[in-house]
Every structure is written in C-alpha cells, then in structure tokens.
Length: 114
Image (cartoon, rainbow, N blue to C red; front, top):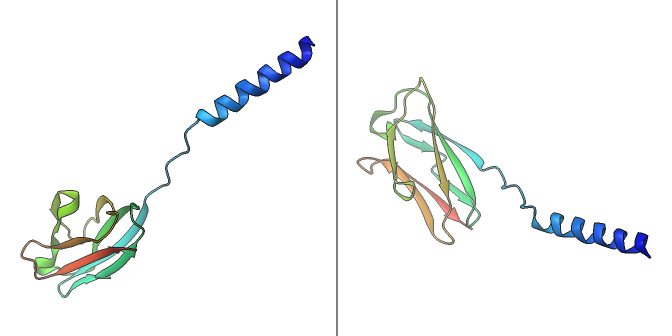
C-alpha cells in the first residue's frame, strides 16, 4: 500500500509541476521593409491580431524623406540609412491597422490585422 501511495503522490506532484510550467513565448516574426526614395516595399502587409512582430527597416539606397520613419503604435520614430537596419518591435492590435510613415506622411505603409 505504501508503494501505491508513494507512486500516486509522485504522479500528482509531476502533474502539478507540468501544469504550472509556462509555455515559452513564440519568437516575434521578423518583417523586412525596404526603404527607398519612392516609399516602402512592401507598403501593405497583413498579420494576425495580437501577433508580435519586429519591423526591420532597411535602406537600399537613397531614402529621401522616407528614411525618417514614425511608428505611432510603438511610440517610435527614427532614421534609417544604408549603414544599419533599424528594428522596431510592435504588437498587432486586436483589429484594425498598424501604420508607419515618414515624418511628413508622404511615404506610408500599413499592416492589417486579419
């Protein structure tokens, strides 16, 4: 009887420990966006609601005003040039769009939550 009780106790403790261990968070999806004088490529994307993304802005040459980028939902703004890509972590809203644009809003892009 002691063996059965000890075995049941060990099984119960194992089940509790397994149930309490958190799942590791999924790594954010990296999305490369080319920055050119003509705008962003791609300028329209889709992502899952609540999905974590890392937007990787890369300049491929001259960027003009498109190189001065604002991502309002991330409360981020900065400049990209050919020497170094810029990474911006964002989380998609439950619905709607996440936008990015140049500081003058002449170059624009969006990610639609679908």
